[in-house]
Length: 595
Image (cartoon, rainbow, N blue to C red; front, side, top):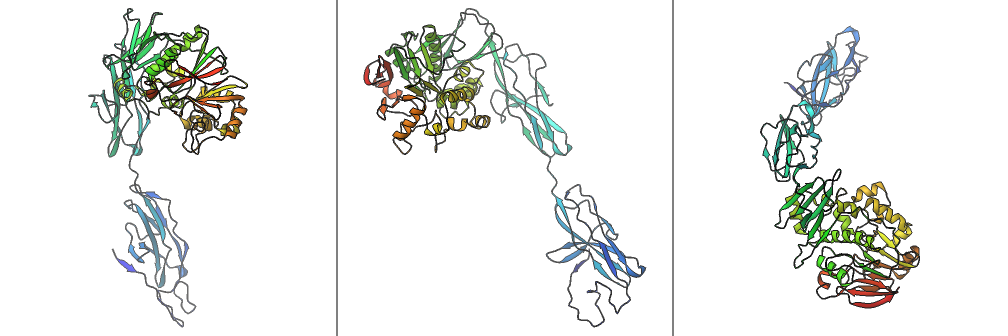
């Protein structure tokens, strides 16, 4: 290929024009003149491997001479041209199909006998890199329902839907095993289609399946693992009690069926389906916390609905933030006459308020939840009342923020093959019950108001009423922040737990902290006056002993149960006969104020 250097001449002429400079007819010459009437147009961006298209020039020559054409590639930096490949001698030039990715420049030189040749403007041709074929999974395999042993229907399939760019043919390989994730597992012989038919004879256990999808010259991808759970079918009518040791989770099913996922005494997992439970069926929780020896029976109930305005019975015991300390919880309830040695309600027509945070941290948080659940029903039957209001740790667990769960729970869910937040999901008995809790309780005008953490003055500025806060709490507790904020922007402040603001009623610390976040006395009055309350009871922020703050307008009751219980320190507050007492685990009373 010949290359040429573009030279620029300075022509000083008197009648004679150098051919290199001639661009128009000289009045002193009768030579033909070439005129380019249509410059070549740049094509749309092309793709490497599928380059097609043409460049075209239109030119005229005076005197009837026939123009000749020669196409060149052009390097604008070096100002060098090279003869173009292919049909480079026509007015229409077909671009080479093998052009590589990059930017190319072409120009055409038009000549004619006795005429000075002229060149078109350079035209830019852009070639994009060929796109690498990519596999996209458009539908992940769906988890089937829980099966009982021997109850997997024939032709039960796991199916994946995928596509690949460039028209390549997809290849499939299914893997299976008992380890969660899609990094392990063994290839299943013959399972090379988009669907895999489950074996009907799987033994009880949790199995994980995933599919690897590939194509020629394409990086393979894997689906998310899908869990297939096969459980024992409980058929012995004599088993009227189902035990759980530190973990007991109940999934009401269709009809009367109940699935139970629990820890056995030796640490193994019980995952069973009771197809038709009788009225005799009970559940028994056994504590697993160190040094704690507590067990109790309970039945399922449909839940108790109370108004968020409290009555004012002869006695009201207020406690909070047990965080899995079942021994401490049982002690304060027994010591103050709420339950007997069998943990049955003995508080009559009186009232127990638990201001959130049963869950997280301690080993027996599941047991405390079941104990409060059980006592709620027994209190109702006795004409009394028990209220549990949501704390930030119930919200955290239900929305799958598991930073604070006990290590034994992590080990349990790994064995059980069930995600921890699913154990408290809306399809479980505890998950349903926890999502039916208020955020705020009040005694009405001039009385006390009860909340897990506190009420930031910003909520008063935003005109949040007790009714609205509770309605939002019932709808959105346990929902991920971004989702609930999108559904209702009022949730953003109500549930806010960001360290810089802490507006939320389950997060605010300004009523207990003595640092720069502390609420002013004037702002506290603003909050109490807006909600028609004389005093606020809060948990959430830990204090060494029950603390009366702001001249008794705030009572902080989140004591460290793990350390206060052994020394019989203060554990909560008892309102009785117009007086308010700080009470210990054994029931000792210290007069702190009056209502």
